[in-house]
Length: 218
Ligand SMILES: [Zn+2]
Image (cartoon, rainbow, N blue to C red; front, top):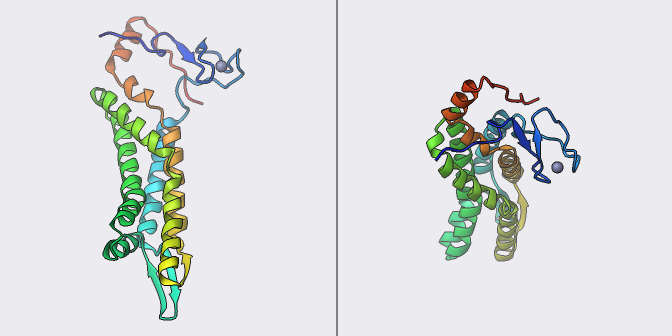
């Protein structure tokens, strides 16, 4: 079914008050918000943040998440050590929660982000609708991102309780938090409309009308 977007009509929508404006307008005359047809620099910023996030995920998983100091000595454990520890001690539920929040969810969110960026890069417009559904999922999960941090705190608390030892968070906790924050920003900066803009229809229609004016992102 043929459809038109704001780009075809040289319009832009104020995402705050929903008023339509011509492309030349920079500020919404109703609510004063800055107008952008698409989130500025959405693709390069999302790439940069997603790559930074994956870089931080490496030390987050390889370095110790917590250091346990007891009479027996010092013991450091990574996220996976924590998962294995709870699994072996019969707390399968806790192991599953830690694995989901600290390993599965961060990797899932990043995999989706890279897939969405590839949809734009390779103009896979037929996958745009599926991409949008995935984006909604990671956007929804994003609201619970701090759960990952809570899980780390929970893990530290539980081990402290069980072992009667002193626990301090290791360097992986900082790397993990930075990775989570980068993914959150990446999701915020991603503009899902760009996936639909890759349809060749836009180019054809604009050229037919002799109208190729798309406002450049500043
Ligand atoms: Zn407005």
